[in-house]
Length: 220
Image (cartoon, rainbow, N blue to C red; front, top):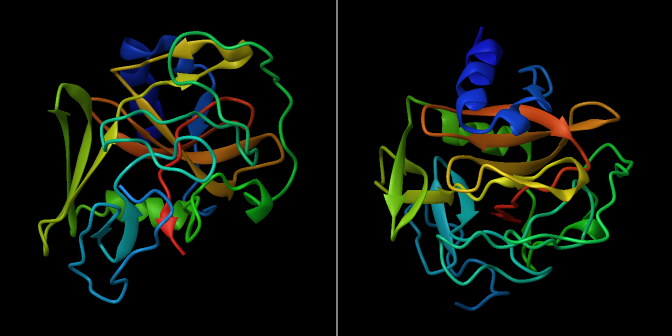
């Protein structure tokens, strides 16, 4: 039922994106390169890291490999799963490849996150969807649409911009109405899991490994 509901809502805003996604089963589960300054403090919040439901998240998307985007609202760059090649989040691209990367997880050598950070697992992304501990709302922050996750205990908030994604053949879809964030978790040999957001819902789903999604890193 959740998968059907997601398809119906996503089709209204990003019809092309919806056609390439299915639900990831529950059983599958600025300094730009600095690590968190106080990773033991559950209420820690700096310019780079914020703790939500026990997980230390970067406050910005990954931009070029090894760097974060300039602001929490910036789209940063898009990446294909288990690849370290950055693609622009605006305009058009050339040289796009629909070849999926192999592997059962996002390998360290291909991780575009800054030093001290990595692509999150599906389990870590699911902590943002724990309604008992985290609230989630669609909002506009500094003129950018996206979804805000707020820790009920600490009131720390994490903003994920609706940056859209690069679909098949490197075509941009859903900018301003949806956002897709890779996890390091594979779904099968062709698909991998991601955290997807639209105005009405956020959930864990899967998509072809060769599409271009955002990366929001967690601290190692």
